[in-house]
Image 1 (tube, rainbow, N blue to C red):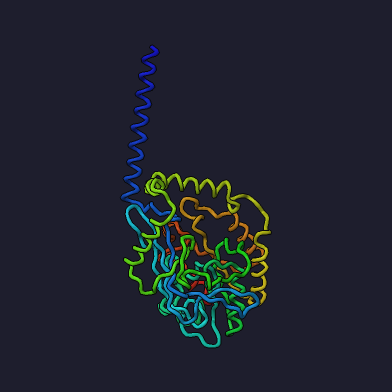
Image 2: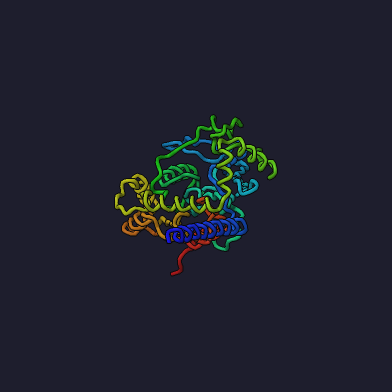
Length: 364
């Protein structure tokens, strides 16, 4: 009787092992043929063409902007299962102010659009450009400036506004924001003399590297491949990261951390982290009472989450209480890059439509 129980236990363990191995192989097969699932942040590489950034010192606090009247390229690559891939490759022109070119602007503009990297257009490439505006039946008749800068928050929006106010007359302000913009710190600038995409001396710890603006795709991928192999990641880690099962486990950890450790998903009513930015927003609204705000849901609020985080809930409540003119541009999971937090081309087209509808005058 005892031996029979042992035999049944062994068979059960064998059956469990077969099911587990079969399940893993099935998951790996699905991951291989269906998903581009080998996206790892430390095997992702960012590039700028040389000398793209300057600091503006004309405002009360300095901030960075793009080099005026320049052609600038930025690229992201990442390692997938077998090879290096280009995630996005964007080239754009900066205007005389050092922002994304939106066409000829003289002494005044109808709309200055303030925002962060969503407005600038990271990931899916700049979307609020001169070419795009010409194709819109409403916006083509308006003079519009793209005041978006990556990493900016409401405090930086105020700095950008101060800069443009010193250059021309502004009729209307539209802000495109995610809830994270209301938590970002004070105005910032780049130490351009030490940036490797400026001086060409790049170390392995630098986030952005320099590439010649006319670099071929093959050259960029080759350089990325070299960077990958020169990193400190062990062979075992490289091997395990090629597993879709490992990716699912990593995603589970991300979800667990977001829900149970990330303040943005915890139930709290403390407005202190947002106050400096909200005060800046109040100052902007005081000067431009017709200010319009477009809120955009973040990558962590779509797809598997599909719910607003606590930051968004509190900011939305505050804006409604203060009677701001607020509209939503709701993106979904297919409107974002696979894991990067920025929209893809499809998402930016949707954001352009939201901007067009917001800027459109209401009929009486």
